[in-house]
Length: 429
Image (cartoon, rainbow, N blue to C red; front, side, top):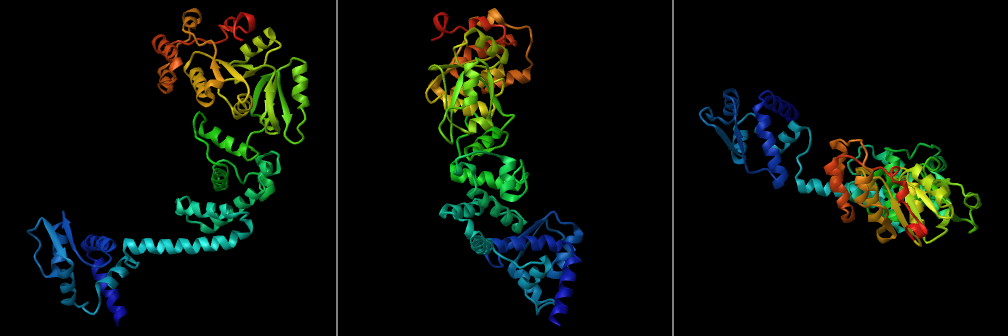
């Protein structure tokens, strides 16, 4: 009988849409108070809606702009109705199809659910916990909300297990390097498991940041930061096409400490070489023939200077700096001073600023003098989109050239001023 009465009651209220407006306010009050109480204020009601309310509450609301209904009035109206055997809490729960719960109760429930879920994860992953930090990492993902809102918990649990397994197999722990597809296939059987944009990649990056530490973004883009993090773990995302052009650079192998014969051969023959990220990942150290290393933005200028000064060490960034360039510079800036020369355009100046920001006094800007502006200014005009990039240029020693660029709207390219790059008795030390 009571079930029949509840069905009739819910039908009655749902046939009169105004009660949804009333009940939503009552529900929000409950969530805040933890019990039914307070009052609801309804405005903008039509005459029909006011009549629907009036029929149940036995009041005339037609002349009122706002209708105010207290919970006490709701209780009295229910007792005076044919649904008097029912209570509002049960009615509202049936109406919304879910139990009424306060914000505090909801938070407590979620906390208990999270604790239970974490205990299950700990039991599931225990064999992969090489130390207490593994458990701390798993817990941190949920505590920080990284995965809390993911719906497919079983899928997440599976991928976390693969990430923990990956953590035990990192190439850096074995003193070697591996390409990302090879590493991924070893861990999961799928060479694309940790590809860009996958949940597998997101979890692996989170794991690596937790264990290796997150470096400040500084001069690196998001893509470069990601590549650098993988590199620190011995994983090469782009190990062959990611290269740096170099001349007279030497290295020592990570595994046996011997000289890298390939680099020695190119240096002996006075030939430039493209050093891949794979090669750099297998080096313990790298160095140049002298205290100074000269780095150019443009390959043509690099080639010209290699021929002009065959006993000097050179690098070429070839435009935007790739991870291989940064890795080699990290090696060289430990014991060398790098002189950098690039184009006088927005992109070139920002590269120079990145290098100075990262390496500070280990990098010296070479040839950035305003006198070259008038001497070598090009005829190519820059659009406003390119010039707007200069807003990011804050390095004090480049402000003069920045102002000339904004005024002239034309660049100076280093191919035109090759003769100004002098080394030795005729120029830099």
